[in-house]
Image 1 (cartoon, rainbow, N blue to C red):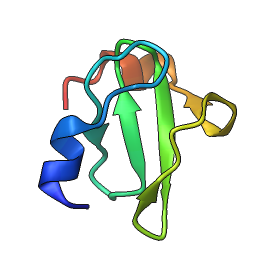
Image 2: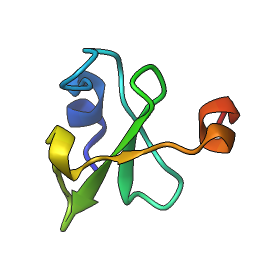
Image 3: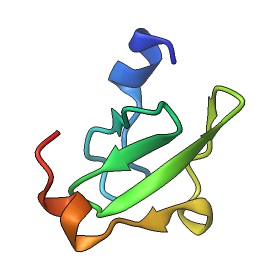
Image 4: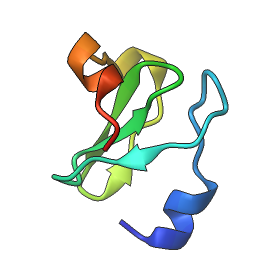
Length: 62
């Protein structure tokens, strides 16, 4: 994913910054506790498409 794009994207719910997971398949919002999918290189920033982070994922500092 383009780094410039990643720098301007925010969580649509909390407006907090997003981070790309190691696999490059999800954008993570630690504040919102959600993971938004990245499909074919396109972030899907819809709350209905996001999954809730597990307790372990929320605590992970990576």
